[in-house]
Length: 408
Image (cartoon, rainbow, N blue to C red; front, side, top):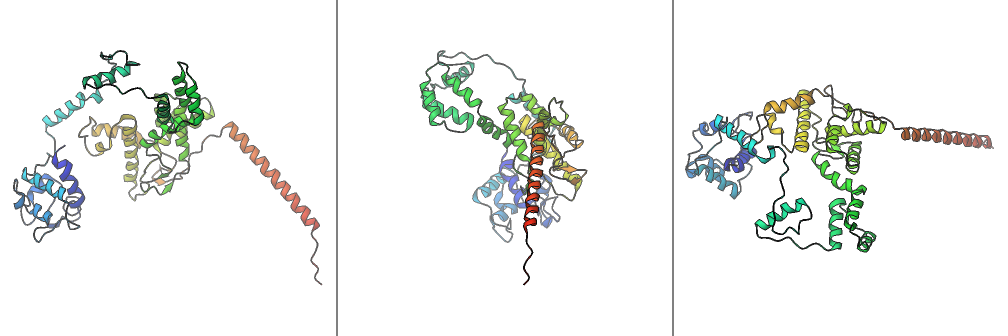
């Protein structure tokens, strides 16, 4: 990335554009610093940059607070930022072309297709290694080959106690108990290590530990809206769904379908239908922009977050850039973005999102009641009426025993 993109444009955007840009209500002194043309046009008083001569550039002098004009007015930039501007002007104040040329577009497309991330998944053959006795499986051969290329040797095997501690933290996030340590050290069978891993994978803590990473990708929190001020009282249902799915080892393709279109999937039991509905919380939780006088803008902001979540979580891509332009680095175009956005625009998002342009009830979707919950509710209802009847009978007995007050 160029010096301009790394060090200059961010400062201009943060410190200058509110007063000196095409988007500002008034461009003070006629200076617009959000485009190449605006930079070289200068202000009403003339040029602000002299290519290759920072000491003669009014822009640089203003940043130095050297003279009558001192910019930005909120405070002088730090030394690193000033040095970056001096270097940039000294190099001729290069500004990336506003519109990429056909040559640049071809180069970008070539980089995209040549990048390993866009190539079909293949199954490479394990490399040859100098120490074939060390690898325990094919994956170890890749690790050992890289070590040997650099003249390194693998570290010695961890002790049994240290191995148990590491694997326990890796899979559950919890240290092994004293009893687990003693049981593992007493187990001298060849299956001792596999038994520990199987036990940890079967632990509820496994889903809690690894579900956390998935929830981080989905912006999960017990509150919604950008300021996180609106409670999401039923967000825990989606959290528990993720943990349970990991613990049940739900196939990844099914895991994706449930979160994107769980309400459209076939189901056989009420519990399955319930899980499918809860899974779509993926599209309804996050830092949502819930209030905006411009309802169409609000609707598209919601869609943008949904597209962005799908890109980041399932594709490992930032698709939000393509809301305004073809992606600069990834092969995602405006057409690709709005093709996906059209799906969410035509989808009615419930449970606290937009309902015909109006902010709706956070819990507007009623989950199906399971048979055991129905029985529990019936039991609670029966106990309520039994308690109420008993209370009324006691009250009637007390009233019967009540004596009138002696007025004498």
